[in-house]
Length: 267
View 1 (cartoon, helix red, strand yellow):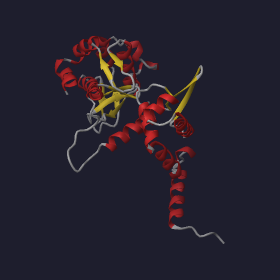
View 2 (cartoon, rainbow, N blue to C red):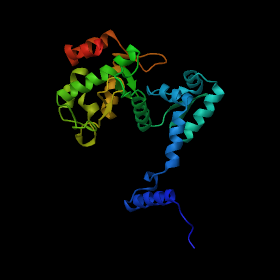
View 3 (cartoon, rainbow, N blue to C red):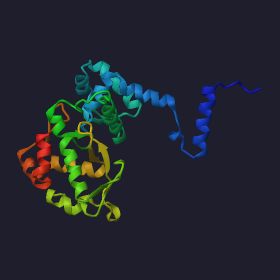
View 4 (cartoon, rainbow, N blue to C red):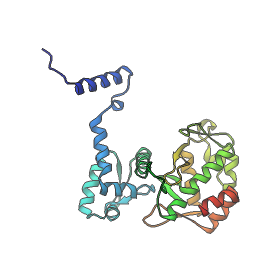
């Protein structure tokens, strides 16, 4: 005699059967307990603060992350161990220290999406994103640029036909015009090329404060790294904000054009 299964068990079995029929790998099948576990880990306030502190792409020690979350180092270590076990963070030992960073770009995208949802207030019109003017102007979003500067760069590349966004702004594709457009920035074609001469991968990322697209993916990371390496942008201590240096202001203004540059600096 077969055991009785309630409606919930039958529904879960049906979902499992559909996944199997589509030939999905085991890791791609629906696991509600796993989803709930990851959401609970990211949703605890101290852990959320530590995850957001790593959104600038850097690796930090447990003590630095404890300070960001305003908790004791011993408590931070327990939180960090849980997030490492769940695949949200990875640890990089170096000498006597253990540095923690986000485990992947997928984790960063999850956090960026949560930040967007957290500030949505459909009942009334509100100012979006951070109140900090520096964060709104330019900041790091994991390994690429965000804020008004990131949006301006994406708009400039799109208007020039170097990057094509689809109609729904859910995907982006670099074109063969990209190297010529980035050359004035000093980004050489050799650094852009992928095997086979294909343009680098890029994708649109909805900007938390501007609610328009900036560019992520390999292209977004390359532009961000070039601006930092060139001394046009500089990181601040304990913040995702990126300061625009005098040399950066000249180089980026000349490349973006005066009208778009005003959008960056004047808001």
